[in-house]
Length: 181
Image (cartoon, rainbow, N blue to C red; front, side, top):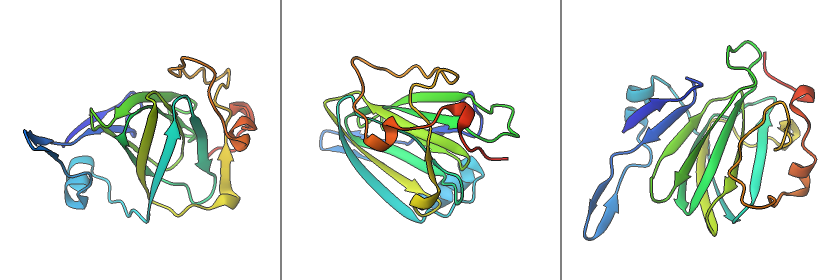
């Protein structure tokens, strides 16, 4: 696997080694030993999540204020634009975001550490996203920042108005969000 440190160095873009021939392809989506070796991160993933979404569905920006989740994200069908926002007040990149296209075709993964908000928009007709988390889902601690916050100015790859859940449409502005110290 190749690791690219993003503009926010704690967020990493991961490109697995893909073995492809006329039959199809094979790659290791996750190998604990190699992940530790390449990233230096000793992780303990406790939950795998799988979501299916239609084109223009925007999910996020989600985070848990207690029991924050690190996430290792990849796409198995379609394509998304995936975004991480640094909510660690003591970080030099506090309030900054990075975004990358992840797709079944490019097989990229993104590591988003605890202390970040996460969201994505579906670029293809449909998308299936699988992600591992370092903490269990704790709905009582879940928070949401509004996707179109003016201070964050995220350049979502929108072709039309996004489709939002009721919860996501009620997200708070970044300035009012609970953040990490």
